[in-house]
Length: 349
Image (cartoon, rainbow, N blue to C red; front, side, top):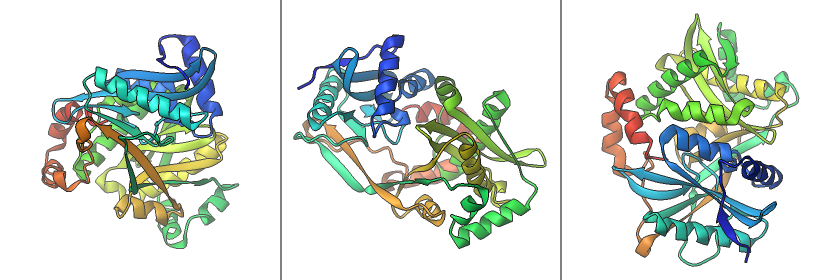
């Protein structure tokens, strides 16, 4: 069984070795990159613990972990924090199992009663609860040109997009202060309207800074007023719109439709060949929206382990447990939601 140790993410050589392994592994994702773990740590104050398997200079597997601590939701070790992926990847099942067991041992030392593995390879040992049939991922290749991209969208959704293309909407991409400020203002309003607290702005800034050219913001405006915006990650030729949203006024102008289509075109110009629409829960509006764009769902599996057989922590805002809280949050004044939301949300990862 390969030895497992904690990597030093302050060591450039360690980081480069991990980056190379993640880039070469077929299941290596943006959430396995050290920049994600460091961005979450810097942006939300949740400690990164990055485990690697194999000898120095010859890695056989990796497992990024975030030590989550919240006065409302308790403690947990998550792989990876604030991500929809990032579970263990390795050269073989023995390596995956070794990483998962080392993660569980670390959870015990950190007094975290649960360990959450989001994707990656599923551990085969006893004690793990594997959740399937709850989430699906959506990914497809990008088309060869702008017109082919438009025609790849099913007819009904394409009609909505054509309406957006008929409006006088402006699209810009960037990473500067204006892009970040507009994106955060739009995203904060969007999640408040959905009934969930917004993440700290420092998280978005830290991830943008950590990913460099592999992350940017695309914003759609009309008459100089930003309506919709998305922060996207680029990894191995695939673009992933990760944190996006639109203001209430975006609906009338189909700004969200324009945003995703414009991102497809922008990503192809950057050299991307694939579009990852992220995950959605079955039987939700987001799930239906992505299918309407011509994306077929791919079932996802997550694994969790808890002390003494306890139920994994429940932080999904779609859970019936939080129905009342969601309804109340939607009614909060935006200024109030933006003030207290980050304090809550930084523990939700």
